[in-house]
Image (cartoon, rainbow, N blue to C red; front, side):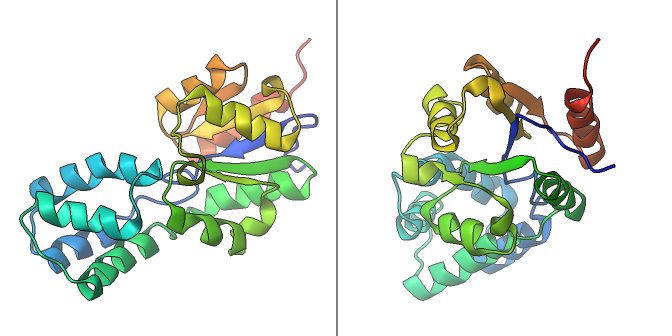
Length: 207
């Protein structure tokens, strides 16, 4: 029997929930920049918050990384680095995406809520995966990051539901807790099997 949650909307995070951790892309970035992991990735991660909040464009994000790591990259070089990083995030976990599709095909409403830069909006929406989502909310477009309460409330408003009807799935515990703080169900993602078990528990009527 297909998994279905009548009366609920399951809202998924993207990075490291539907997508896999981009290990190969990170190795390629180190090779392309000539930097070591301890130099590149703390800056990459710190500045990512500004990118995902919409405070930095993609170009300015990579220029800021260059400045912080003592590099000078042309637009051509930045495009290469961006492409390595960007495409790495589109290797998905087929078990998780199949679960999204199973929910969708069984009549459960599904949506996406992601902390991500402006460059992810159209790929999320226009990829084959995007056909499954009723709505896609991208943090850069909203100028606010999870776990700020407003992004969960705005997602619910777009879906026309109260927070109690939302089941939110995220690999970061603080983001799942942020959803719970507004009255939704927050599920901390650790694996496809664990997520299926959590969703099945929600689908099972209690006595």
